[in-house]
Length: 168
Image (tube, rainbow, N blue to C red; front, side):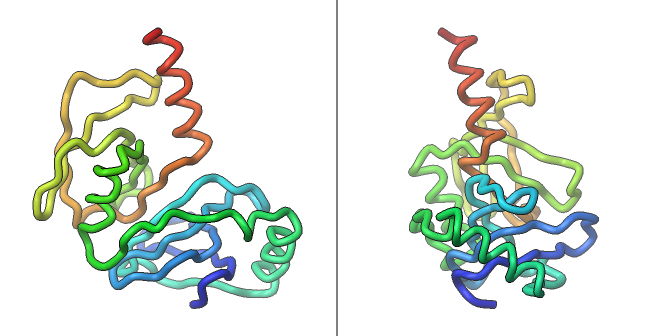
């Protein structure tokens, strides 16, 4: 796997692949510019390396890479998120106050919100519900159960924007 190349990542036990341009590779996580459809940039994702079954860089991916280059997507800068170990990305999300969307082992589950507390192997989330409403609860998750984390996606940005209109 090479930085700056477009890959399709097959995840163990998941039906659908995750697509993106590799920005950085750490021991536990891979940072990508997320690409949905064929050519649409949709924020960033980190994928837990131990859950990647296969990464594909075939002729179709090379073609997509050329289109992304022509669109300027390959030149979009990416955050300097630490990928040194399992927990450093979570500390970065906490410090940056990023709103994240993450998926645990079951790809049909997804949770969104802001990390408000980090412990050695767990974190507390102030969740935003799928209706764009901030929950009054705090939810606790095990870091080890997380497979992919997304941020700055259209879905997240849209719900944040919406939630600001209903609070005002």
